[in-house]
Image (cartoon, rainbow, N blue to C red):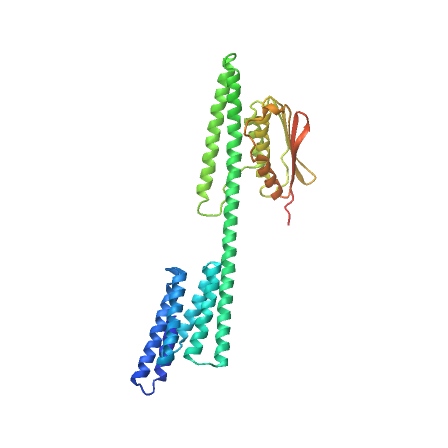
Length: 364
């Protein structure tokens, strides 16, 4: 804008051959209108875009109407460039209805400036229409890019919220379910077996402390990743599964583990997803079949990581009220995202199984 103002003044100075008063007044009027419109264009980022566009268009159109009886101000490069900038910004930044109004107003201002200040000339009219069309096209392109960017940001926010919801479910549900089941067991044996009550209370204390530790770890991960694009999850590996099963059933009195860690490298995310699948399956087993037996199998077969969890002792009465959660849904989403398959369901009247396969060769 400053460069165009300088060009306008330079052209005006070169045109002054006989500096009479009327010519100088007209040049000053042209410069004044140009500076006002350019200033509004520059101020569009610190004031409502509708106010900036409306004010600039009004000043330009009023100057065009005044030029008919007075003969000035003339049309300047600075004013024209400012109108183009405001047209693009208005179409890009206003709502749909406002963008249509800005486009129509820009057409009126552009044609009015040419017809009222320069007179009717086919070449000038066509140039004005071309300039207006380019401005509208630029505004629409900017509007499309802005809309696409906002959609991408919203999609990223939804994905982060979903990932955080899954992580909260995974971290909290496993430990809290164990606490609830042990508390129910403690209540059931409170009057007959004091030693088992003590054991149950100790296990409740351990599970609560572990849940708090996991929550602190997750919150720490969120804080560490607050300034970058780090995932909002706690990282686990395939080698963490034996410790998970041991915590689920200390001493492995009701649980059998068959764990064969693959010798070859596995793709990113497979080990963590396998851990989360086993944890969710154990959580469901503890919730719906606390007195049943559980068998966990993790092995590599045919270029895939196979995970199988079986548990018996499932009865309709064991389902906790209001326990319809999102564990299976989140588990299936994780597996599908890695190109794996998952089957979960009853294989007998009292036996439930979860079977998951994850590819061990990264897809290209």
